[in-house]
Image 1 (cartoon, rainbow, N blue to C red):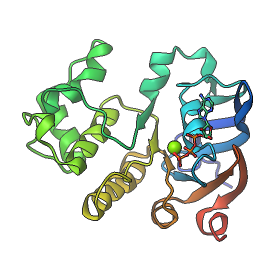
Image 2: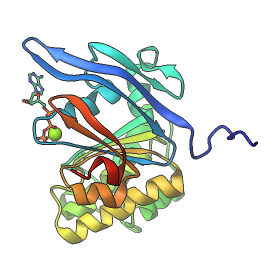
Image 3: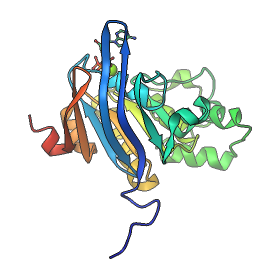
Image 4: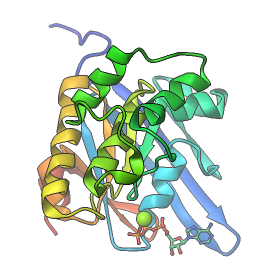
Length: 233
Ligand SMILES: Nc1ncnc2c1ncn2[C@@H]1O[C@H](COP(=O)(O)OP(=O)(O)OP(=O)(O)O)[C@@H](O)[C@H]1O
Ligand SMILES: [Mg+2]
């Protein structure tokens, strides 16, 4: 029998235990327990208002859980300084999140905050990785929606994250741009081994991209498992 090596495909990056959040008069998320493993895409689906974004925001502590916790590579995330945690657990939202200025400046922002400078070659590599070679000097105000979203991914990847949280990352894009971003999400898992937690209302997209899915209703996980089984209903 061979034991898996650390860092292999089945290693757990995020272990989510009984995670929940209530605000006065409302339970947003309760009892969420699941794992996210290296290289996989885990889809979170469910009706509008079921708590998908609320759950995602708990995973990098943008909101504070009122029950439970998350272990990042075995460490309780409450022991990790929030800024470091959000570098390690990156996030991409429905609308591209970019600062005014050049594409390269946007990529440099995160590393600079930690006193690191990306070399021109590193910037070129990040841009090539999202299909935007030669975009270094482009002003972000002139990008198409799909290009801007791919710069958002490159920005997140510039921080060398251990996992990415994606909240409806293609729902503001047209069909062609959506397919490009889907290809990118697949590459992030398969080539870089970075797991993605993908919130989507698009069940077909979840089936295309994810190995496993969680179905949320009323803030609770009502089904989970291999994507086709979890999404059958
Ligand atoms: N801070 C808050 N205080 C009170 N209620 C909130 C708060 N944040 C979210 N909610 C409510 O909690 C529920 C879940 O919201 P959430 O944004 O997580 O849903 P969602 O599944 O992401 O929905 P959508 O698919 O529309 O994006 C909604 O009813 C929302 O109005
Ligand atoms: Mg949402």
